[in-house]
Length: 168
Image 1 (cartoon, rainbow, N blue to C red):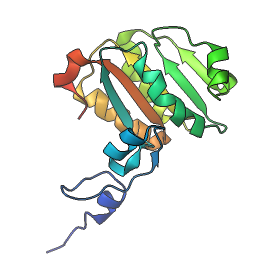
Image 2 (image 1 turned 30 degrees about the vertical axis):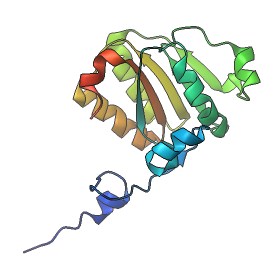
Image 3 (image 1 turned 90 degrees about the vertical axis):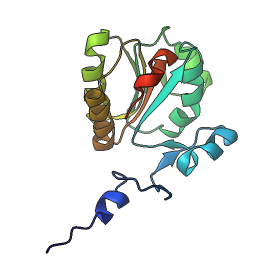
């Protein structure tokens, strides 16, 4: 009888065992109380992070700014379907380089595909995406795998009405 070790899957963060600590790379949220509540002490660095909010216009960008300041390298940051046009001056005031930030508008039915392509790209560090549509579990899982493959952080902003259909 041959034995198979699950240790490589645990070590890579692809399999989680209850009552264990997760050792994934994280980025600081800039908010100590929030860091204290998150596993690992910050946002997972190469994962999809889902934000459910009733205020999609204001909350998300404030939660991502500190993290984006940490990503100031050769890779890009992207807004997908933002509710308002980003202001270059405001981004500069927050310590971000607006020349390395892109803004993409896409139809809701194409957003899962668009996000997957962006997340797989090695030239993208982080994405904040607003979505009014619903995603199937398969699409959400593909987004998670794309983030791991491209080492991209994806903040997916969704309304609380999808609470019963949260990401797997």
